[in-house]
Image 1 (cartoon, rainbow, N blue to C red):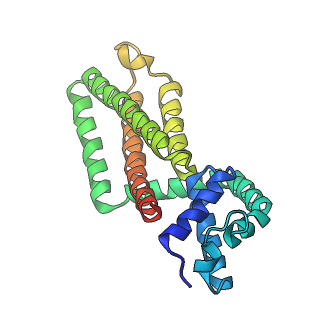
Image 2 (cartoon, helix red, strand yellow; image 1 turned 120 degrees about the horizontal axis):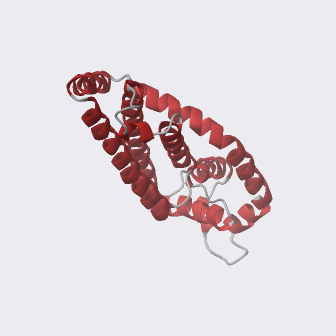
Length: 220
């Protein structure tokens, strides 16, 4: 018998109560446990009917508490690199969508025109845009984390975003952008590409955020 939203919510709350904090991992575990109960329990209403610690559901979950938590720790260890790989693939696929690919080419063409017209002005425009995007997206990531808590896939997006920032600002540093004598066009294009990556990562993050919010709405 298929579980109701309220019954699925009870599974989610139990897992959260035993310390399974990462929401996306918890989603997967909820799906697995719900399927397991649907396939093995004939009367799910009686199974979930509250009767203190004698409630069949509570006894069932407590008997598997250690197993669930060990599974969670194992998934948490391997989830980071899996999600990094998944996120990079998602960002790449987003970049080669026709409308995005054309927009990227047009942007780089505009940068080229700015460079030919006024190199230092172009560098300042791109750098300020990159800095503002980093500042704005960081605020949005933190707001989402405060609202929904820890989520592995969102952590992967934030990690790629931060890596992009570190590479752009420090390899080499951004100081030459403000110096006409030592400025190189390489820094301009590097900053422009970093800005493109920021926007693509954030766009993919918004799609992921929407999926998570829909899933949470179904559990509510």
